[in-house]
Length: 267
Image 1 (cartoon, rainbow, N blue to C red):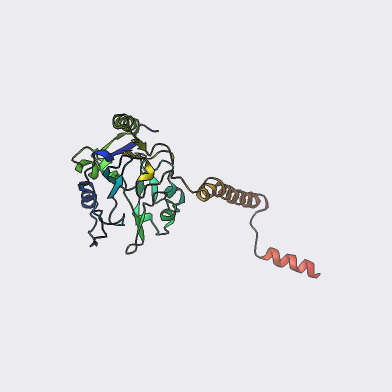
Image 2 (tube, rainbow, N blue to C red; image 1 turned 135 degrees about the vertical axis):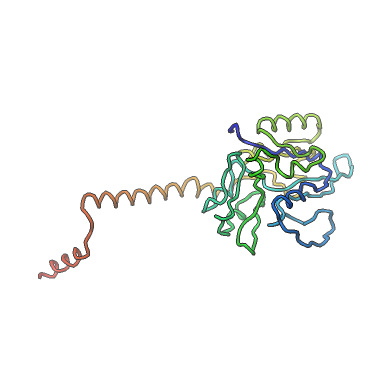
């Protein structure tokens, strides 16, 4: 962990689903609204979209005591330390920022959608009109200016806080002890640790669209961390060999082959 690593802590037990963060994200990033239809839930829109990087998920849950509860969860990019999207991005559009988060340089995106297939949290969204990917960048420009992310600034209950990774992790663990029961910290034990942590009141498997054990697909690890370096090494060896041959033998001239053909023909 670097001293500059920043983590956003989401305490779901303090969230009232006011959706102030959802609106603030749209406003700050100047994302257009889109007409939606009711699908039987207060959750709107139904899922993350290219123009909705932050979504409050609504879920009804009956706990072990038979009590009906509302579970609210702010969904968005988890900013993995070992990010599958960064591993598969061929252009460097997806990259690690100075804060440890995952940033996106939209002008470098070629719309290959590798990140869409690779992300264990199903976060990146494809915009057909621009042929590019969109996602939360943890308000990188605001952080660079010493300002809070728009979502954190808008939260009226203190459900969203941000700070150094070690400080946020201690705060999350302290809160879990206060809550007791099945309360837990989510995000610190997989994909190298995420730069978004949750305090959950229930076990992770209870929550919709929240993977229990997210990980980078094995195929990506094998390609990115093993075969790709070997292929680059092989390519470098070929280039080095070719250059060495050039230094020793000199350039091959067009008439060299013609001369060889004449000798073989006996002329």
